[in-house]
Image (cartoon, rainbow, N blue to C red; front, side, top):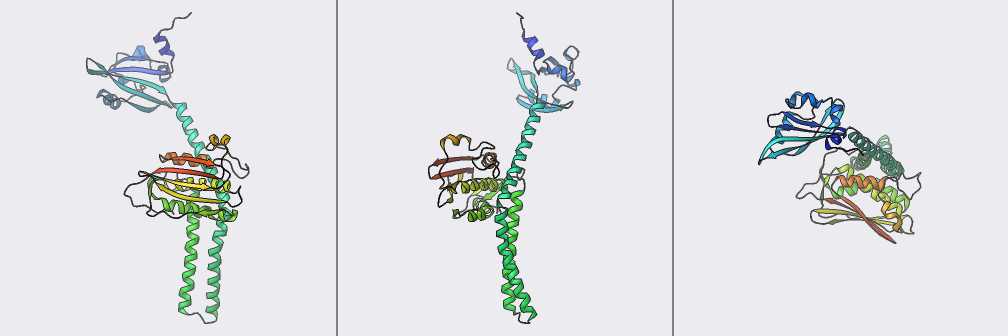
Amino acid sequence: MHSWKLENIMSHAPILCFVIDRDEQLVLLNGGLATQLGLKPEEIVGKPAFKASALPIKRSHFRKALSGHSFSITLSLQGFSYETSLRPLEEGGEIQAVMGMTADMTKHLQMEQFLDDERHRLLATQRLNSLAGIASGLAHEINNPLAIISGYAEQLHTQAQAGQLASDRLIFSTGKIVEACDRCHAIIESLKHFARDGSYDPFESCSVNEIIAVALQLSEQSFHAMGVKLEWQPLLPDIGLKGRRLQLIQALFNVLRNACEASLQVKEPKVSIQVLDHGDRASIEVMDNGPGIPESLRVKIFEPFFTTKDHMRSVGVGLSTAKGMIEEHEGRISFISSPGATCFSISLPKVPNRTTRSAS
């Protein structure tokens, strides 16, 4: 049986271990990464450490560790990414050297980048899927103000041709046209915001009433078309949440859409929203009167691609992306379900003593 020594194991392990003393001399270097980095222990040990350009540490990092700090750094060398953990070494109560332990993080970081790209791709897929679902409702919503604009414009045109256009009638009709145009603008802006990727937006103070209002504006036509009763009263006084406004709207929209579709399985479908104040946190509660979630499916509810609906209508990423967005805000999403009632709760940190900005 082969007798392994620590030196043998270290020389083959995919790491690099080194020690630099107070005089910046490299006193130890071992590990399988030495070959990858082009470092030859027999040539550089006992010599000034920072003359070895491939050593994954800079003098500023060494001095910080020598002053008593333990920390990690990531450097790119020769097309690879290396993470080095540094800690001071004491002897006789004084720091005499700095030890470094390096690992090749290239594949790990590449995988993280791949997963991040996939997450953004899934978010884009989910937004497109949601946009397809609300397109017909918004088209109907826009047709109403367009009909008002067309009707009043035609009246003004006819009265102007007949020389019967009174100033009071002109003021009234143009006022109605302006209101209808503002309504169209608000709808289009809501849709534009929803379609945009907001994952890199800065965190800011958001009005919970406005977040709910915009999410409802995007989904209310679908509720109406499906015959689902919607109940909500704005919270007074309002509550401020700290987060990315667009992501909070998208997350709530996903939860609302799920509740709407769940309630369709009963004779008189209904979805209600309420906001609860818990001191330093607030929760948005979305309740539906559907048949409830079976016990066997509850552990899968937030899994990507899990859906109980027709796969032609849903790709099953609505609740999973909502969960991801909410957790990015140090929030939690949970649910309680029983036959005839399911409540999804979105708990988020509040902004104390804030002035909220509109989410629309």
